[in-house]
Amino acid sequence: MNEFERARKVLAGGVNSPVRAFGAVGGDPIFIERAEGAYLYGSDAKRYLDYVGSWGPMVAGHAHPKVVEAVQEAAARGLSFGAPTELETRLAEVVIERAPSIERLRFVNSGTEATMSALRLARAATGRELIVKFEGCYHGHSDSLLVAAGSGALTFGMPTSPGVPAALAHLTLVLPYNDLEAAAQLLGERGGDIAAVIVEPVAGNMGCVPPEPGFLEGLMAAARSKGTLVIFDEVMTGFRVGPGGAQRLYGLVPDLTTFGKVIGGGLPVAAFGGRAGLMAQLAPEGPVYQAGTLSGNPLGMAAGLATLELTAEPGFYRRLDETTQKLAEGLQAAAHEAGVALTVNRVCGMFSLFFAEGEVRRFHEVKRSDAKLYARWFHAMLEAGVHFAPSAFETAFVSSAHGEKEIDATLSVARNAFASLIA
Ligand code: KE4
Image (cartoon, rainbow, N blue to C red; front, side, top):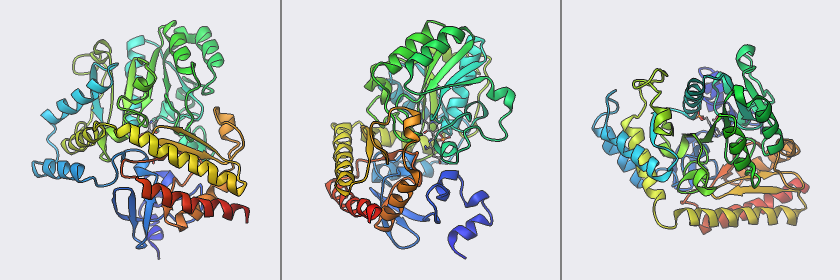
């Protein structure tokens, strides 16, 4: 019996998150024993150059000494108190200093919790029930948002999961991403009944699809004209695409923002925040209930603080951008050399490969990507020791631990992998 067979005897599907099961690419998942820098070390005694990075958190590389030391020191003082700590205040101060649209923050334990809570707050603050999301975007698995979701749900072709009450799903309206005309029309017609629009400012869960110029600005103007709140889901983009996330990269001011992934440096930390007046409606100040036993956990705060401190080093994001650009351009050239149609989308340290001709800016263009060809490429890369996402509809991540050696090694393996698709 192999590790996956053993896992499947006790864990649903053998995993604790569906995409990890390799269902979209075939074969059994590799089990990881440890990781360091840009590398994973499998129980198969193989080393893998890693571009999943735990789906985004490991922007400073795996097991960074400063992060590990911060967590060890916090752990030695006790793992959880269920009472306020100065660490929570400190991490919130750092986040607010870097994302000026936020005046008050609330820590939670996952991106799902952050978006679910932000929506409850938006519905309470506006007294409205309808919400809008975009096809191909994924905001976690709370019932209201598991409608036409991206990420795993898209991969498994189950855009609306069983178990989501129809009555609730009907309160979620779904628009095409990057289609400002459709958004302006819906908001024009029904904006008065819509509590909030939630959007990934750079979509990362249908693969990486950047916002078209003017899309976010137009969406925000249309929403504001109707008193609809705008929620930027920056769980993936927060501190990934720049020091202040996508909102600072694009110079925009959402009403509410959700964070996750990088903000916890690999530990279960997420957050939502916005204007003080909005956040004051949350318990205990206001009537909107939201709570969590381990919210603001000291180890997570320590990991998040250490990670954000590393990203504050001069030139961190410039180097991340340059490294990822070199990789993206090299992959594009390698595919072209092999005669494989490939489009690579990228924003700073996040990128995706689409096995399709032409630009990929809309969900229907994403679906033109050849997922079977991606799966073959994925296994050719994995076989050669390079670990990409086990799904064609995910985003890949570069860390500050990926240097010239790692990029050159990746491109050399990729050239053979693309060639193997044509052979
Ligand atoms: P979590 O509940 O998984 O912490 O966060 C949900 C979430 C919310 N918003 C955005 C923009 C996200 O990308 C995510 C989670 N991202 C996926 C990766 N595509 C998590 C990977 C997984 O489901 O295992």
